[in-house]
Image (cartoon, rainbow, N blue to C red; front, side):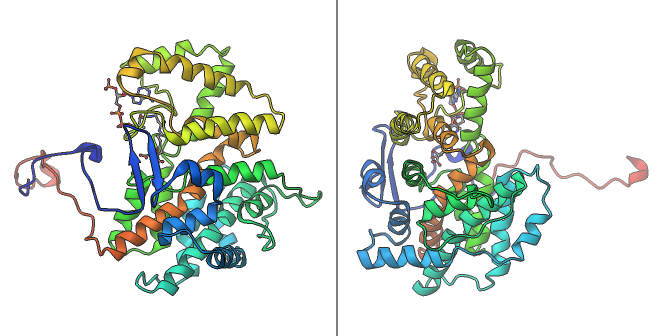
Length: 392
Ligand code: SDX
């Protein structure tokens, strides 16, 4: 066994690193980015400002903030040859798979690997990937819809530009809605980092081999895709839709979720760290009410979500296991109200989580962390002689 005999499956009781980026208190439901409360950042900052804070450690001065916004606007282009890679995908490809592949492909179009010790090279790579991921995301969506691909409009803000690339149609004037822009900016902030979650740990381990930033981010996107992690926001809406189709009775689904013999889980509920309400879910729940009211949308699925949460929060099974709604439980309801299609929900999570992944990758490299290489407890066959195929 190589001398290590304790197994910590899922790393439930293992700290992988020291980090100064994000603080979580699971018992109290506290989340802070570089010491600033998520509630304040969601209200008072914009997504790029929070991205700068996470990555470089301080809120940007006005000059730094304006330059960061401007540099990203200027970089919101992607090499046209990337379209040839996109053309190879079928329309049915899930956008998470497309975006992960195209992000890795960015390495080929930005050959120089990032020298993390060079502030200038790091800043350049940060601006590039923050500017280009939304373009790739919008291209994945447009490909699925059979629509012509759009390039960014460098006169627009980050979120507005993304929405225009997603929804601008050749035959009509695109009009952005400030309610939608504001709601999406807030959602991206709430998803921006979350210490050593599954996809961030993936980015750190991939980067610990000194793989490049874009390749490490691509690995993180793939890890986020799973329904137990970021893919839950898509699974929540699919679950709520199924309940609606099934007449809206959620009690049956609560019982299924409690049945040990039934693999069904209440998606959007539970969390490895939060044993209290996920503070992001609290903010998103309020935002969902506001956005739907502002847009005049009646979404029966929101009523089902509220009813489901009320019943689960008073049920012994969920209470005894400290299972509360997490960030994914209500976010899909807002994405849907913003006109974002369900398969793109987890891509939205990836766009939000990007600055966190970058910040964590940079910290891991600046701290010169060793390559991630855990041991195991071997339980396989003992030594045995080879047998020729004729004698097997
Ligand atoms: C995200 O880590 C992060 O920070 C992630 C994230 C981020 O910002 O990066 O916050 C984003 O991924 C949020 C989580 C999204 N996933 C889901 O909503 C999927 C449904 N939730 C679960 O699968 C689960 O709660 C996890 C994956 C979130 C956490 O799993 P754990 O910590 O490994 O807990 P577990 O599976 O060991 O469950 C403990 C108990 C078990 O029951 P017992 O065996 O003790 O009887 O709680 C039960 C589980 O069966 N349980 C659930 C449940 N979640 C846990 N039962 C029903 N429905 C659920 N959702």
